Image (cartoon, rainbow, N blue to C red):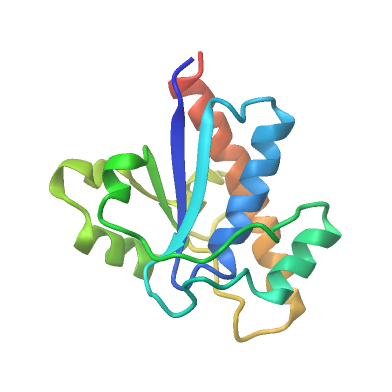
Amino acid sequence: MSQVSVLFVCMGNICRSPTAHGVFRSMVVAEKLADAIEIDSAGTHAYHVGNEPDRRAQETARRRGIDLSDLVARRVDPADFGRFDYVVAMDQDNYLSLSEICPEEHRDKIYMFMDFAAETRSREVPDPYYGGAAGFDRVFDMVEAASAGLLAEIRSRHLR
């Protein structure tokens, strides 16, 4: 079984992408695929480098049995495009930011996260940073749906 690597990306790497990192990691561990799938998260901007995930994101995840406390915000590095098989953007703005810095030979690795959630109409995971707790719950629900779809995609394409 070959290893597959996934990088989740939002703007600051404190709300959406660490939530996706934690949820996806939990699914991967539950499926006993931790040795087969490498997971990380990063931001397109350096606003929060070195910080832990937003307190509200951590509380939402903790209520649902997911621990994000070991995650630390970092900025996307151009080397990430060579290192990761899937560079997964939370929204169109971050997708475009990634496309601008991605070498041409790795452009096929950039994906919109919600494209993996077939039953969801939204193409973007909204940024809950300036809203209340309900926004973090909505993001978590969306992330769960897209994570299940991404894991199914990886299983069918890479882990036969």
